[in-house]
Image 1 (spheres, rainbow, N blue to C red):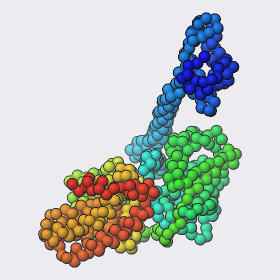
Image 2: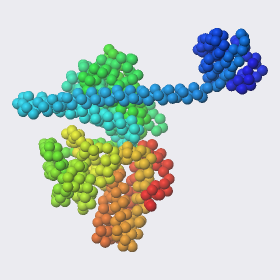
Image 3: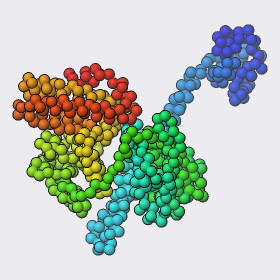
Image 4: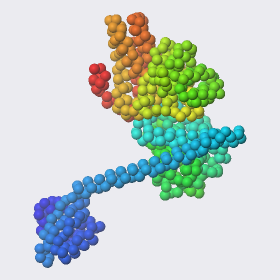
Length: 612
């Protein structure tokens, strides 16, 4: 017989008489041998040791029982049953967490081992090349040593870039832009970058579906090109003969977007079926020997998968070891709501101010820029940079952030306080300290863009060209440009919620502070008016370059002289209204996570934190 609680626990009606056959029919089939052995031991020893079994209840639920007892005569046993299902599930959760932690530790150790190898190998070549150059070889020997030195440095930078990209994507704080662009042109531009790499190996780089009429879409062309670059680069690296093909075709549409498939196919050695399921894992070395031969961290595919998912798409791979590998990327793009942005190559020399305290870096960068046809004034500290830009106009300032006398942050703030046009000069910050909190300080000081050291010549020239295009676009649009790079930095630094609070604060302040500035001016409270104007200008500079910001700087200077004309206040209100329209349009196009966070911000929440 059983107690009433056992009937309830086992899901058996109280009027059912327990029998041996009934019990065996309810015990999980995999536990029958266990209970038989325990019963045989009990018949011999007189005690049924604690045994855990699974019981299949009539309602379909499986419970875990702990049974124990002792013999009361040759054919009778007195015992207990206890439901330990919750304990078992907790135990399983702990085991799973332990296994996951161990797996994470193994993955971390493996990743560190890969990083160590991928950094130490080119560093060995770098040190050997430097040592050989110190012996002052003749010209014929110097050229291959310089080539080896350049290749080693590029390899180290590639590893560092992969790690930074992966860390940024892994944190979930990558902001996906939403701008109009020509999908075909973006893919062709990306593919053109690999013509030389493919040609050096004798490979044909073929494209299908990329000719004909443009395909205007709305999305993030930079992230798309980064994703595809990883795939095309891998395809070329692991293909010894034949071709690499890039294809584009539409797949399906819904009410919100059109889906496009990009195919990257190579005729290389292919990948074994047993490794395909692990190919997108962090640090996975599908073919360790080949990876080390060609160079690479194994992070590119993991980054590509995460970027595809961040854009709402997916990535898949198929491979035949005898015929090659095919990667398929499907991405949804919203339909363009205006003309696609077409970047034009910037031409003509620039007048550049270079502020860099390291004499070697200063000489190398000045030489590079001069060879590109630019005119360069090079100074060794921030104070001389401020004096130079106050004396003559420049098209661009390259500002090292760590300098004697006056550092780059203070020099940037001082330049932004000058009268136009000096205060509007684009500033490209260069620094070895690229941590998000430091970059935030650089942008708050007034820089326009940032480049981490060590400086690679190609990256520097690309950034200069990009800043020229950005500056021209800002002029064409009336001087207002919302800087998505700064928004990305805010998200990377504080997450979507903090970025949303700042954006909501900006919208509020653009409407509120001009009223307070005007009231302070009318009351001749000049210090208060200057403080309010400077506070709004600083907040605006956290998001981009705006005409209102430059007007506010002029108001600050006028308030210092205890003067501000009514016409200036009228212009302040007019520009504030125009900027509010621009910001509302920009914020309406931000990625969904930020838009949702903005909607969730309650205005008093940030007012309490900012108004005192």
